Length: 201
Image 1: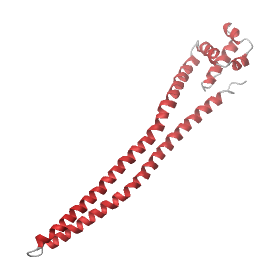
Image 2 (image 1 turned 60 degrees about the vertical axis):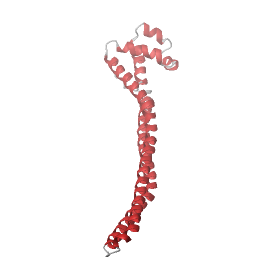
Image 3 (image 1 turned 180 degrees about the vertical axis):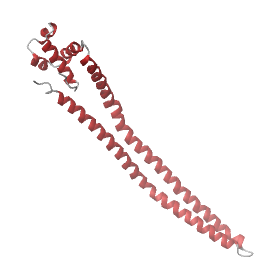
Image 4 (image 1 turned 135 degrees about the vertical axis):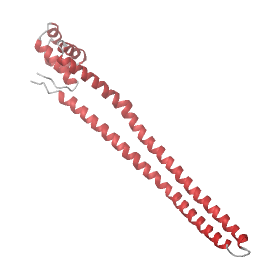
């Protein structure tokens, strides 16, 4: 008996598709993280610029304080050091701004790299998977309902390829109309196998 002969291809296809989707999502996340880290490396010059500017500003400020304590001329000599310290602080601020811009760019490109693959999953695979779940759930209910076998058999007559129907019998439609139990069972099993469901006997 070929009850399970055609069930495995459907089940295997569904399993492989699900595994591919999981791998696709995982690799998309890893790629987005890699892209984020790669772009963040562009912030290194900004970090060095900020560090150098901060150190220069601190050194000029300390020099200005020391010179400011010089009697009589101290206040007059601190001007250039104060201006240099202010310029160094501007340099550090520019480095910080560059880091923030690189960070924003890294987030934007990483999210873009993640959103596009996830959109393929959400708009392509997920609706098909949900539709299959609805159909399979309905078929499970029909499988145990009193007239469920007849409805499953009718769906098989409507949906199955002719070569599959010919395997059941030369005049499968006539046998179904006459209510032949073996034909109805075979047609119902054919429809259940198409959905990747186990055929109970």
